[in-house]
Length: 236
Image 1 (spheres, helix red, strand yellow):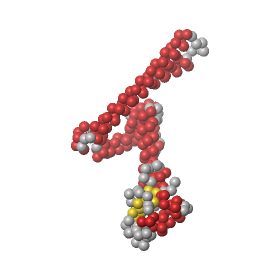
Image 2 (cartoon, rainbow, N blue to C red; image 1 turned 90 degrees about the horizontal axis):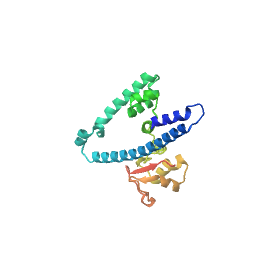
Image 3 (cartoon, rainbow, N blue to C red; image 1 turned 90 degrees about the vertical axis):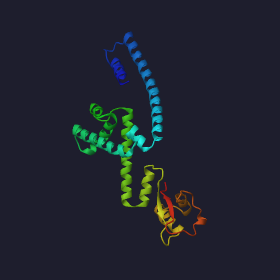
Image 4 (cartoon, rainbow, N blue to C red; image 1 turned 180 degrees about the vertical axis):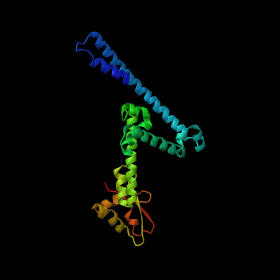
């Protein structure tokens, strides 16, 4: 497709401005071929996706020993160390090739992990390949989210952890509160939700759940026991 696009651009941009019938026919033929290639690519991509899903399903039906013999990429204990070693090598090679600090070459190394180091060098950066663009973006996004969660957990601030989970769109944006000696339900709601977020008691009840994630029946909360747990969500 890229070669055909280049050919089309060459036909359109070359010449002195006089468009002959022969040139028009060549341009139209080139456009027609490009459309055909796009259709074929979509069909091939669908087939590839179906084959990939079938293969993953087959692998997941195997036990750990069978997976390691069939495809080590599906054994985390083998894949993660090998993958980390590979991506670190790509990042360092990008640093040597492009210059600058390691931090500036992380995204190039991630792209090289997907598309190959030579393609990154040829494109002088991120190759304009759809899969590579998506892969690099997703890895950088996941890395950023992981670093944000690491910071939130380092503060030991339960509210910040829940807020961070909500902001980076993790499914379960809550923290677990364990009842302490002398706690009562209203004081927990007041301290953990009403005061920090300036909301009413009835509004706060929408953001507190029992340990299994079920809504609270306040009629059952007249007696709560030490170590009893609640999920407290960050109000949106």
